[in-house]
Image 1 (cartoon, one colour):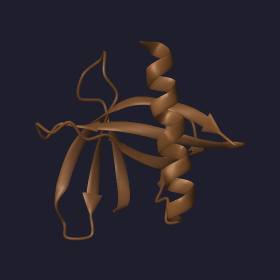
Image 2 (cartoon, helix red, strand yellow; image 1 turned 90 degrees about the vertical axis):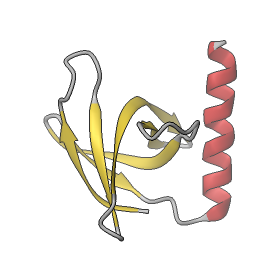
Image 3 (cartoon, rainbow, N blue to C red; image 1 turned 30 degrees about the vertical axis):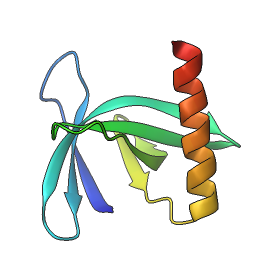
Image 4 (cartoon, helix red, strand yellow; image 1 turned 180 degrees about the vertical axis):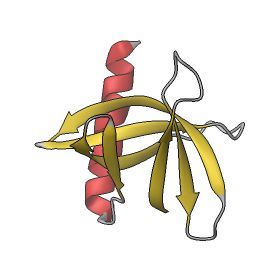
Length: 93
């Protein structure tokens, strides 16, 4: 899981952030979008690592153009959030 994040503006058209993991590895991710579920905000990230993965974290704005990613540690909550994300994606097709 990511323990901190930095927001970079690598491309004017894409919002990119760099996730730094506990093992000091990093991966750049495109911000796919922010969505609400049961009164909380979540963010979907697409890693630039040639996988089909989508990372989902809790999302909290902390200031102008600043935010915090929150690990979803509860398995039940995570499954519900992923199901909501899948529903949103299906509705957009």
